[in-house]
Structure formats: C-alpha cells, structure tokens
Image (tube, rainbow, N blue to C red; front, side, top):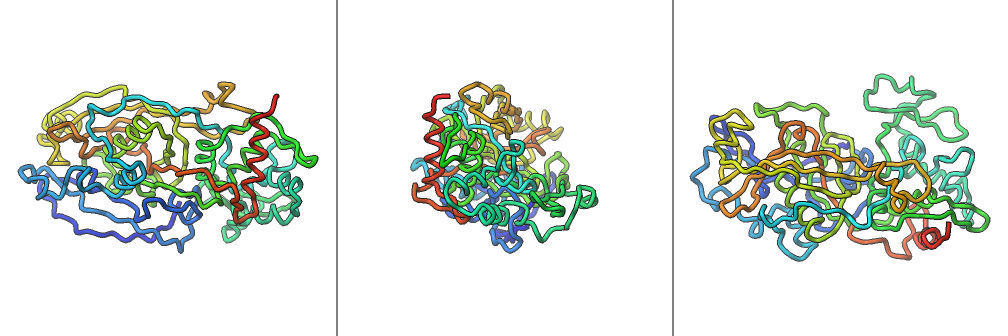
Length: 450
C-alpha cells in the first residue's frame, strides 16, 4: 500500500500482569495533518501506493491505561473528558462543525441515511489506464472525448492522464507482456498495457482514484442523459469519469481522521484476538461510533470510509447506518463474556461496557451506464456489513473508548474522512481538465429529457 515515514511520539507505559494496550479515545494514534488538509497524491486518503518519499507523521500516544490503574482519577490517568482534551481526530471534527461532539451513548442518533444517495461508478483502476479506458466497446474513452470536444490534442491529453493516474504513472514497476509476467509479486498485480501497446507494467489492481470518485459521488449530481458537445457524445458514465478526475486534481479540502495502515494483512495478535499494531486496530471503535453518530446522525453530512483495515485502500461513500443491538455490562461481566478474564483488561476508567452491533451500508463500484440512484439500481451497488464492538462508558454514559470484537477485529474501517466543499468553478487540474467545462456537461446531463 503505502510507505510512510512514521514518527512515533510519547513514552510507553510499563504493563503489569494482565494489562493490555487499552483504547481510550483520547489516547489513540492519529496522523499529523492540518484540521483541513489538501487532497493530493501524497495525502493518506490517496487510492494507491504513496510515493516512498512522502512524509506523513503518525503520532502514537500512550494508550496503556490498563486495569491496574483502576483507582486513578481522570487527571492522573491523562484521560480527560472529550470536550476538554480531545484526541486531534475529534478536534478536527469539532473545529469543522464548530461545536463539541456529542458523546453520550443515550443521546446519539441510532439510525440515519444519506440524502441524496451517492452515485455508483468506477474507481478507474490504474492498471486499465484510468479514464483512458475504453469502457464502451470501440467507443472513445472519456479522456479522448474530452480532448476532442474541447480542442485538446487527444494523444497528449491521454498521455498526461496516463502519467498522472494511469499505466505510465507506474513505469518503474516490473515490465510485462501478460499477467503471467506478474506471477510471484503476490501483491494482486495484473499486467497493465496501454491501448495500442504490446507491453506494460505489473500494477496492483486496487490502485485507482476511489479517493476522487467517493467525494464526487457525494457532492455532485448524478449524470442522467447523454450530452453532445461539438459533435462528441458523452454518455453519463463518461461524465462520471470526468467529474471523478476533477476531484483527483482539484486540491480539495479534507477533514481526515484515523491512521492509514501500512503493514501485513495478517499481523500478530494479542491474547485477546486483537492486532498488536495500533494502526491496524484503528479506527478506534469508540471514536468510530461517536464520529458516525455525529457526522451523519446529528449533522446530516455524508462521509467516506476506507472500509479495508488492511494495507489496501478502498474509499467508499457511506449510505447509512443502523444501531441494531446494544447491551450494557459491568466491566467484570464484560471481561468474562468477551475475554474469558476476571477483570476488564483495557480502559480502567470505564464504569460500564456496552456491546453494540451496528449495520453499516456504503456504495460500491459500478460499471453500468445511465442514472443508478433515481432508477433504484443503486440498491444493487450497496454493500452492507454488521460491525460488532464494545463501547467503554463513564458514569454518565459518555463514550471514552472502545474495542472491536470477533470478525470486526480484522474487518473494520481504517480511516474516515470527507471533502469540505465542491471545487471552485474556475478550477483547472494539473492534467488540464476544466471544472467549468465538466460542470457544463454535468448540468446539461442532469437537465436533459431522456
């Protein structure tokens, strides 16, 4: 996935007896980004491997508040109420929304859905040469169509797209003439060969511009009708490709939370079945519950999840959530029920523990032309997963931490983020794509009668 230059700050606290790395929200790891960062190819939300030279700092705070500390006060443990001393991820949300996050489990919205729904589309894989891909038989690609309609040289424009988001962007990888040449890499690579060429490069198939499709699908209307511009016909799927490409190069503002994981798919686990790498356990289950309940449930805003906890990045726009099961335990009862232990081994400040099962749904990739939301076809491109986890609560019912359970230990979101606004209308991206031109196509498609 990504080669990060990670700097780990803070001192490790010695563990005693059965103590394990705990997961209070305010002691979680985070990425040292501005409250609103810029989405580019060195941003942790980027949907492919980052440049090895990319400098991204990971701050790992002390999260070792174990059961042996059960008599310490909040101040002594370093864990303060979220609204007083929040983790920087929580601070980013509070800074953006201009108000403290609601953390009381009894006051949080239990179900919500995005409206309007994000539209399904492709993530325009790198190994297929991005939006240079001819998705409709012998019909020209979205990039070729744009160049012809707006007076650009098609060869130069498609080469630029390839160097930025396509096969030529990976020209340092193993050369190949077929998929067999990529055997042994064990990274999911296939041989990406440009149109008209006989050789190419071995490229992991998950590389793409999902980081651009997801916000575009949230913030832009879905194309409906075909549009003719200067004798070139743009299908709705072509327009989706172009608006997606815009968000790749628009330097959009991003509120990013969590830590992008860079490690093995199956890393070592502790005695409780949790991954020992804090970046794999992240997003913290308690923070996740607070975040989605506030962002979507309270503020009615959509967001994006990297739904893969492992090294691959799969950015998906959220459709909705439903908290379908909650049950409260004492810490001792929770320890016996979930960990076969006589004392709760994690957050010593927890007064009660709540088991939660939340049903999450998000929009997945589609390679189908035409409107998919208004026709109800979006339901065919919706994935639904149940997450199970524990919420650690204080005496007032405020969420102060959490732990993933069972299958969710290894299958939970890696990071959560959203783009703050549409691009400026005068935006021209680094590949020469004009937002004004693409918006004109989009607006005509939405207004069309078809």
